[in-house]
Length: 432
Image (cartoon, rainbow, N blue to C red):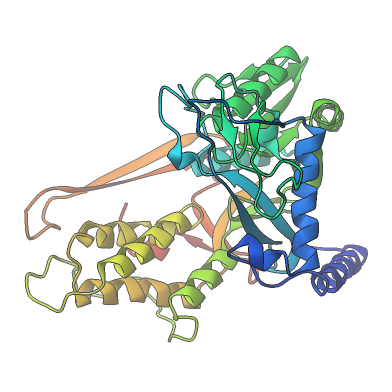
């Protein structure tokens, strides 16, 4: 539970964010021409170009014969915190990399990216070891990656050099949008961490480990977002200092929001949820005022392939499926019905759309459920599996299901508002 001082500090921070949002643009422009009419967006674009100058990203040159320049475009985004309060206007200059040609403009481009499952395992281990998890953000991370290819880009819209309007920029660093940018940044960070005593994970290539006697520091990378924690607080402080030496970083304190996951680190454990995301998708599909449903699937009614029935918009259906699949990162209770409905994306009928809407109505009644990782737990891996031989009455193929539980961390779904626990089997309404 929060103390009175912590509650007052949180209220003060919310008030400051609210006041700040009054001076920021609430609208995301689609074009640079529209953004140039708003001083807040002009300031955001100038801040982005300042990073280019500080990092020595490019040189203004004449375009050599036989070469072509890649176009550039401004992307405008309103950054919000986990409460949905606007905290920043962000302008990002990106190259139109889709015009690049393989073998000419780039070669190898693969770069590993952390999966949501890896983040959950990271938090499970943090709860087991009872240490805090912190977050940092690399400002303009791709600009630190050096590229070997000869790449030219057009001048930024709205910021053309009046003395040399026909010149182009030759890239020395990786610009957002070019195909090799993620790999160039990962190689830079990977090399830097290895030079400073870190080891890379054998299976998870975005996990870096540093050991010192009996203490361990874990660092998880997701492009330019970094989460880290250690059994010794001093190792966390040393890591922050290390990153600030070579990169321009934003220290964000304790982890609260990462990849859409809301993280609350309590004295007795870690709770992750996606309540804000639930609200967003309910608003997106116009179901925020729908009648809540107590169960995910109608009782005694199977979801099957109906040869007859009214067709529905396949794009809408697939969009709703995709939104729910992302939600399963913290909501295993909806996994089974979402996967069943996902089987009918080729030609969905009205009955399938109604089944999807029922899942949304269930979320309407249970928006704050999530995963609870208690500190007092073991770290054993337990797996369950089941096979339903007669569930698929159309093709009569075996329908298998499985569930893996890491100790006592993931076998509970906790509503932190009411502090009530429910077993996954009861919530799902199925036997695992």
